[in-house]
Length: 139
Ligand SMILES: [Ca+2]
Ligand SMILES: [Ca+2]
Image (cartoon, rainbow, N blue to C red):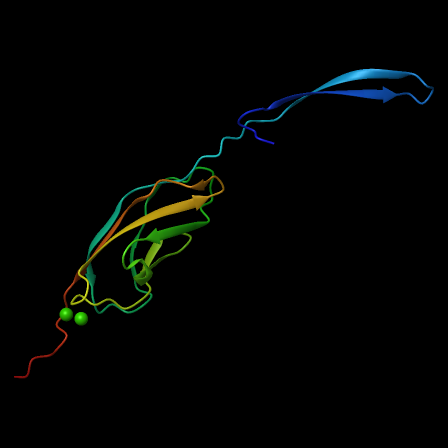
């Protein structure tokens, strides 16, 4: 049934009293229109992620402006290098694979959240990596 298009059904049934008499009865069925609202996120940016942070380090939290028809089931990130980061069900962003400033200084990713209504808006997930001296200079 599609709640958005039709929420009022008229059904005609025949009731029998067991003595051979039957009475047509009209039954109205109204289904509450439950709007399914996708989650709304805010752009996420963090610019001080050191390249030597260990895997699993929390680097931020995605802001959910409206959970819609929550709860949010998952966050999905996409873009070049998206596999280096993970977002859990609560929107916490962590490092999933080690970073290397010398290979990639910034990540311009996208993130969206899925609840029972499906995926909501896609926002920017921008992460800038900070250089850390890789080689300790000899004195
Ligand atoms: Ca490095
Ligand atoms: Ca470095």
